[in-house]
Amino acid sequence: MLFKLTFITVALVALASAANYKRVTCPDGVNTCTNEACCVFFALRDDLQNNLFNKQCGEDVHESLRLTFHDGVGFSQSGAFKGNGADGSIILFKDIETNYVENAGTDDGVDALAPFLQNHSVSAGDLIQFAAAVGLTNCPGAPQLQFLAGRPNATIPADDGTVPQPQDSVDSILARFADVGISSDEVIHLLASHTVARSDTLVAGHTAVPFDSTPFTFDTQIFLEMLLAGTAVPFGVNNTVGAEVDSPLASEGEMRLQSDFALSRDSRTACEWQSMVDNQSLMMSNFQTAMKKLSNIGQDTSKLVDCTEVLPFPLPPAAQQATFPAGTSQSDLQQVCSSAFPTLSVNAGQATQIPGCPNGDLDASDC
Figure 1 (cartoon, rainbow, N blue to C red):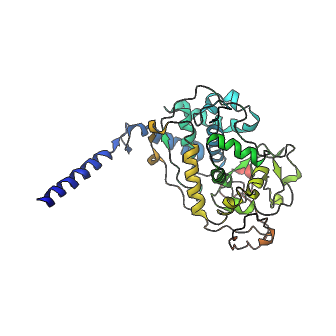
Figure 2 (cartoon, helix red, strand yellow):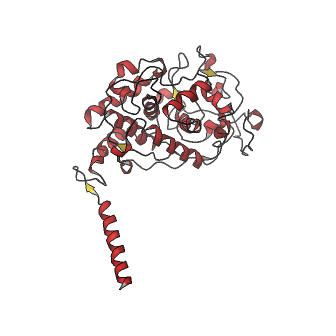
Figure 3 (cartoon, rainbow, N blue to C red):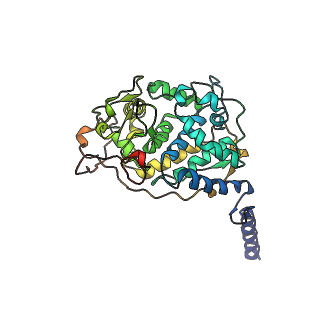
């Protein structure tokens, strides 16, 4: 009898669990999901992939990912700044926020997303986070980000000064992030985004200037190359406000942010930086967790709906191990962390050529 009652109890629990995960058929008659609130994002996903990203890890992905940061850190636990975090204010108050010095160039990303806000019934905050999560799946090696839906639209712009600048000191950068609620380790984890980042504004007369030698793959090269001794600035043009320092691959067109350089060598963050030099899975996990926090800053997550299931599956890593670019070696390391440095191979042959397009074309104007 006891066995029979136990069996019935287990069966009822299983039925209840199945009911909780019953899928809803969306109005399009094609897609299903666990919550009807997610249905609107299927059409948005396809629109973004087909008409903005073209299913590539290109410039629009870079710009969309940048917006998650510039929108999300518009928040202050201490009350030093006004702003409600990841609420889409950088889109809704574009004429104010994109004119802040620290937001230079974000107008391109805002303009690219504006039509999607008009054509789909989503909030600006949701659009920013969803677009980045979708776009990142086109970058080999990127983790799948969590996407929660239901952010209310911003009612006020974030204040000027909420976004750290690349010429800022480590003390200033870590203090600003601490006021947002992001730890020093999480700052380093978020900087994994620079593996697919380029600058359009920091080097006068030049756009699409990469931060590492593989700007279209989400890999650990950024963590290795940042620790190499710099030789010059790309194109012989130095940023006049101190945002740039010498790069190890200047002749190949790679630039180095002063902030990344300083954080990779500061005693508070150097070991966290070095831990990801040759650990793809750790970098992916760290970035995924840090982005979960960043994307929900200022939000009551109990009122949001998990729509991660709508996202495409991300592409696998292109390579599992970082390598010293041709012409560099272990002797070029400027290691601050006392932990053992991984043994890495050196790329043989001619100098590294950094692609300008996702398809490997060296000329960015061909993209």
